Image (cartoon, one colour):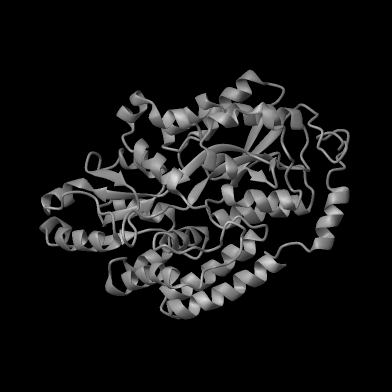
Length: 424
């Protein structure tokens, strides 16, 4: 997906906010008018946890004239983004409230596919600062955090203990060494060491960025300027490439998305897994309950850095019934409901207080690790042409993991591709 030209963006600026009277209200002084009440839609990726519809049922029971219909998109983040953009470009009112990956906010705001929101309406001061920053574009609030996300290292406590490994690794070398000890156990002879998400989709961008950042490199600087052709970045990408070659990462992991890795870990095929917090509650219901824990992601010389994940809720600029949409976002992003999502689905809440709640920590001992992951996390490139940027990253990283390119050549090519993308 290529980004729109400046001319087209200007045309949108002139026309995109002229909403119909039966829709979200007319624009006044360039600002959206959040008017209109009635049925709306909530558009998000497929709910693999089963927690969203019960929450919508509570809303619908309390608001019989303003019911929300849940439109579930594919689990693949790239496919979600594509369908949301198609809806925006046709100015369809089929989508009302969008659940955006945190890195899409700038792109959607810049193209005026989503509306700038009334900031004072939401308790942003109670949320973790890095999480709130993902919902802003050029000083304005264009979405409200509904969940955050930080990558964590899941590991088999029972096997590490039996192999004489004192605790979880903090470096890649320690992880490899721990695996070698575990694989000497009879019950671990068919296991492999580690996996993340390496299929050619957004998960590969996440895992690539984490490897680069965890080796001291960067993908883009704070201003969005590409800076990936460096020795540090090569060390990160080389770790992934070498791990595929020497069997630390199983060959089949080149096809892994989040669910593939989760199932491999739960079925006893992996010692270590990089994944999001949602895995915790599901693994607790599996055969490895009580046999695993989580730790910060390892890095080259010490604890690594996660890519900052999560979702923000935004209002489609072409939607109807925007007054209802604002109320619904307030409902879904409340501390009460984000706590429910933490308890029922292990989704990371945006509210700082929930990570320090002693009762919650007793129930969910991973919370301190998760908070550390989020606070230390590095955002993926916050650039308007994000689609072009992530596509370039996926292409070059995948070529290296498949053995088609060296890390050095891929990073040189990626530097050029990113420079071209952000210059548009």
